[in-house]
Length: 78
Image (cartoon, rainbow, N blue to C red; front, top):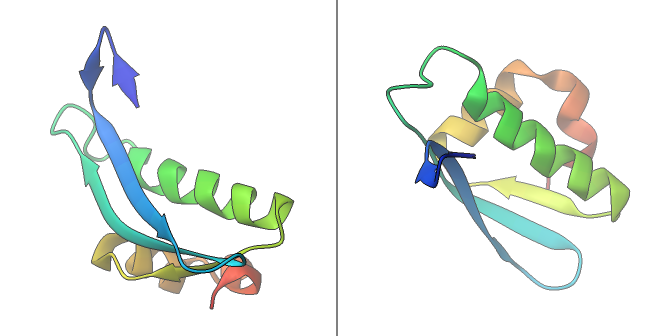
């Protein structure tokens, strides 16, 4: 997520084969803390995974925490 060229939130991932992605890092600027921006990033990954029949390994502690609190996303977990 950017605003005026400034990165305010980001999530990084890598591919693990053809059917898996690994979320390895999520970071949110202090400007967006408490706004749900981090969860929006994870939600975008979930939507992408569903659209492309992928599974997600949330190695990032934040992403893993979001998955633990959102059981309706269990279908994309690896």
